[in-house]
Image 1 (cartoon, helix red, strand yellow):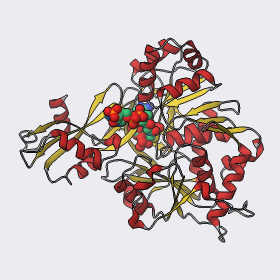
Image 2 (tube, protein in one colour; image 1 turned 180 degrees about the horizontal axis):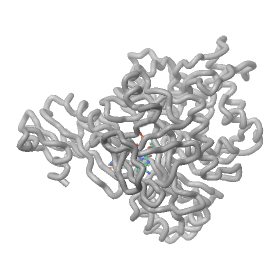
Image 3 (tube, protein in one colour; image 1 turned 30 degrees about the horizontal axis):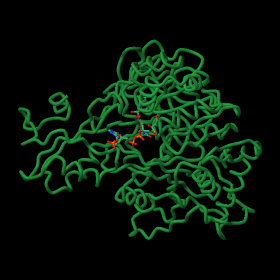
Image 4 (tube, protein in one colour; image 1 turned 90 degrees about the horizontal axis):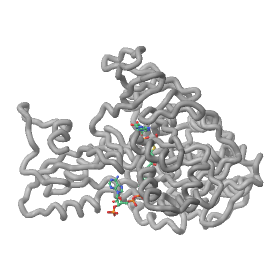
Amino acid sequence: MLHLLKKAKTHADRIAIQSDGKEFTYGYLDKRSDEIASFLLGNESDLNEERIGLLVRPDIHYVVALWGIWKSGAIAVPLSLSAKESELDHYISDSNISLIISSNNCKEQKNIPQKNSIHIENIENINAPECTSQPILSNDRKAMIIYTSGTTNKPKGVLTTHGNIEAQITALVEAWKWTKDDHIPLILPLHHIHGIINSLCCPLYVGAKVSMLGGFNVDNVCKEIAQSDCTVFTAVPTIYFSLIEKLEKTDETEIFNGFKKLRLMMSGSAALAPEIHKKWEALTGQKILERYGMTEVGMALSNKIDGERRPGAVGEPLPNVEIKLEDENGKEITKEGEIGQILIKGPQVFKEYQNLIEKTKESFKDGWFLTGDVAVMEDGYYRLLGRDSIDIIKSGGYKISALEIEDVLLKNQNIKECAVIAKDDEKWGEIVVAAITVNTDSIETKELQEWCSKYLSDYKIPRIIKVLDQLPKNSMGKVTKKELKELFF
Ligand code: MLC
Ligand code: AMP
């Protein structure tokens, strides 16, 4: 069983979670998650890696449901609250989910497809006696599946074990010096590892306090930072962009003082522009610690907590993480300044992609995970240069597959051809843009844009900047996406 869950008993009286104006102790988390495990187990002694979906807002219910699922021996599949019906359909059937834990205030339940005959259980209705017996879980037991987009046209389920999760947490507790006196605002979504591992599990592992703010809202974050005793902050670059906009307009000294007194501010999930790093330091005196991670491996590289925090760089390997760079021919790079793909090895690296045996095999070379991220080592620190695939877009910290969006666009009978590409953007890092040709003269860009809003998740809506007569062709008869980007931007 994860130490995370066991350790809750040792600080039972401490406040673990602040959510919706209430405080919940570790003792409460332990007891309520026991009840949920007991309910899930029914007459069984172990759910043996049954998959249970989690469609819950980021509040106290999420935490007790996650812990309850783990205690029952099941695998937790956190689901995106912004997923449309077709996306939920994919997660549910791919993971073979038969039960989804949700809550009364989760209006997104309406997006759960009916055809899967899924059972939905609202957590408030779960009343069960505390468990007398729970399964004993070894580190190699499967614990969680997180869906992430990639070069395949449907999101892949990244399956991690309890041992992987434990290793991901302990590396960060050590590197970033988490202690029970820490207090963090949780503002990130809880279907990705930045939110689940960095913002939630690390503080809960050490007995610290998490204020669940229910998502990102610039005013709520500033209020919390101004009024509370928060010590640690982690976010994606887009959030720092929004905070800078706010701080440049306000003269409320409590907000500035709140940020100034934090012991650690971190950024990751996408490249933090050196410009944001510098502006934030000028406004608050805080040098943001940038780190690099991936759903498949947890966090891998980080600037030093007590050493240099270099703008534009992601630092050095975290504890127990092995890193190497390889050139295009698969030869290891040993010199600084030479560019190569990042390969990662260590106990935190995931077990497999759900239902994708071949894809899993292709993603490893001699036990090293091939990240697809390209980097260079300079003066002892790694600097990321981008991805080796043009079809992966990072927008607002979310990974988006161009192929997935193209697949959906082509379902519109008015669209003849399409190419989805990323446009650099100060706030979002990249925004999704679609170049399309149409079958009819009478269709308006606005109409297509509305159609996209309906069939693609909010954050994936491509900005259709131009409807073309035909996609431009080069002398070989086919334009590459790289050429398209050069043509448009
Ligand atoms: C939203 N909008 C976008 C957009 N997303 N526009 C362009 N591109 C995008 N990607 C628009 C909306 O349509 C809306 O427009 C307006 O912006 C506000 O939308 P919102 O959804 O309310 O935005 P906001 O709440 O501010 O959300 C921004 C955010 C969110 C940054 C808080 O995107 C977020 O939580 N991102 C974090 C994702 C994350 O956790 N990634 C980690 C993956 S794990 P209008 O016109 O209606 O106003 C990983 C590993 C690692 O990567 O290393 O950590
Ligand atoms: P995800 O699949 O959502 O976990 O996203 C992981 C990807 O985010 C990595 O493979 C990187 O491409 C990107 N990423 C994470 N951290 C950083 C960072 N600090 N700078 C640039 N890209 C990052």
